[in-house]
Image (cartoon, rainbow, N blue to C red):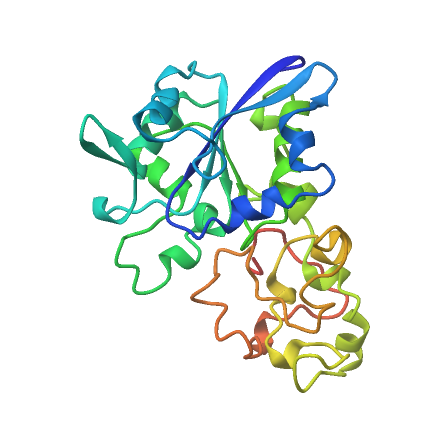
Length: 294
């Protein structure tokens, strides 16, 4: 994949389309840069299918998915995959409804890489929250059950930062299309993005170390007592910030909600309730990426 066209197919399962909206609000690179310009000299990203942004619709649009070359496309999946057929269909072929699970399991074995975009696709997320009547699961869980061995990279976040999505694609391309060369943690998240706890780089960390805690959202001190999940959450939000570097949750006065974690959302709510003390890292102690703290 040193040169040429990188084909990208984007499926949407059970979710809110927030991951697509986030990507479309990308600033550096812009969506135009991603889809029109060369990502690298001689390398262009070709978006073959995306139900939210493409002009085509109906069976004509779905037919694009029948002509994909085996092993020569990246499959991005947004949203969790439901077990119950009536919960998520992507269209009709010859009068028959096609479920997202059916199409996903048809395309995943043929893809060179599956990118689980967002926490719903990566870990189940809000879509799989209790009582989960649709039986929503992560892309990896569905693949494991079906015996699909295509490499997976998880890009969690609710939604993920647009840079996280584009960076993951670029790392894969720079690795020559060899997913094994993309450094990931035990939860299959790129280490370049999810390698550090929010807590490690939080600008309010000194307040935590000094035991100075906010009593309500908006207070300037550490937000631990009002439910900040930064001590168990891996992401680079404090360094990258959001909306083209304008702001992020804690800077805006709200606690981190832990949205990049597999515990989100059932185990990270209520949002404004403090973490149990035994889940907090101690001063000077490192955190194991993807281990007990993740």
